[in-house]
Length: 476
Ligand SMILES: Cc1cc2nc3c(=O)[nH]c(=O)nc-3n(C[C@H](O)[C@H](O)[C@H](O)COP(=O)(O)OP(=O)(O)OC[C@H]3O[C@@H](n4cnc5c(N)ncnc54)[C@H](O)[C@@H]3O)c2cc1C
Image (cartoon, rainbow, N blue to C red; front, side, top):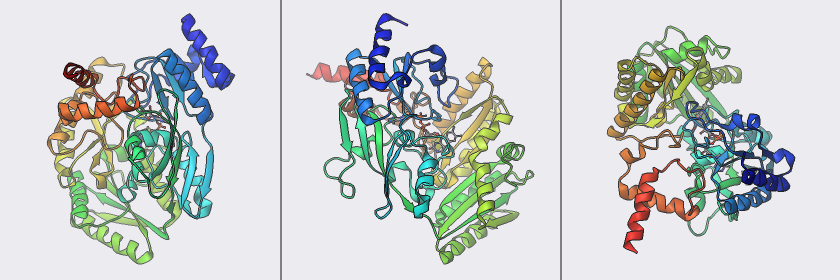
């Protein structure tokens, strides 16, 4: 460690206390990557502020030192967003876990952004309220990470992704200023900076507090498991549900390899091992509404060859069915040491064709792919099992990942449904956007962070940003 870095650590310790600064290498190594585990870089320092005020004071110091800064919640991201590729200081929110206020009458909560997603629901369920966006990682991921990625989840089919639920934010800028974007709550005045911030992947500032809309718990919930002997047919059933405007709250597909992994694990949910695919569908609302929706779901599933449709209203049965789905990535650890989770969005009438295309891309490269995805949103998650210690296999995985993106974009889809661009999809931005589109995005980023010190090397391709800057300098 250089003398300058040692001095910086001491100055930060004066603000954050001894437990707020990690400088020993053994303490920093756990922060070297997120869920995109083949990309790693140990940060030079890790800091763990407890409050907005501490965070702002530390950020002022880091601005003076001119070092790169990377925010991190729980590190469950899957696109390398929290990986400090350019070194510098990692700002973790693990000590910012307070639920500051629950206003049950007006259905909102104010939290520090290190609060874990599911803990917010636990904190407000006594009031008959919950936090609707439910990433499958919700037992670990933080509200700050959800805000930065505009995260989704199975029930976002009905309730919308994170952006629909964030009413306000407190943000510490790259320079250490505090922006309170949390008032007025109901009718924001001026530019929608909260809307702009959600999904900015840690490149605009550090969100330290969030004001969040809470959703009333539904009167009735029913979950159906439709059992298919053919993945194509399961995809077609979803396409038809969308076309017929059937509106459950969640529509998920799990394919055979995923079912096997789940059923062979401690999360065994009772999915039949001889099925080629299962549809997991949930409806919520009043009794009549739920019954009608689930009758439509069952009719369409059977029209598309479902051999059985099991319906559950009992909370314990439903929890088991969802635990299998939400634990599916973990269960894939049985198949290989590493999992590459791709994430793309496709038009929902083309699900069958694009799931087939993904299968073919992986088959050609001798890769094992499992599909478990938010089918109702057209959000594909091809999960490729591999071993990162095998360089040739890793090369084939990355090649397949790029090819999958290209096919989905060509079909009118998008690069990412919910996991963000991060490091993983940087090159894909140039496949999706024109130079002018990228230049506009770079200018917005630089308005928040002129020196591009926040999460450098992520989300927007540097080349496009440099070109914009050169063009503007030439013009002036
Ligand atoms: C098993 C598993 C299942 C998953 N399922 C889903 C799913 O269903 N839906 C979904 O959308 N995602 C899913 N994910 C991906 C991931 O959980 C989400 O992207 C989540 O929002 C990341 O939260 P985190 O706290 O772990 O953030 P991190 O991984 O720590 O960070 C993610 C990004 O947010 C930035 N960031 C973090 N905190 C802040 C902050 N306070 N201010 C500014 N920027 C910040 C980081 O710099 C980084 O760019 C899954 C991941 C796993 C491992």
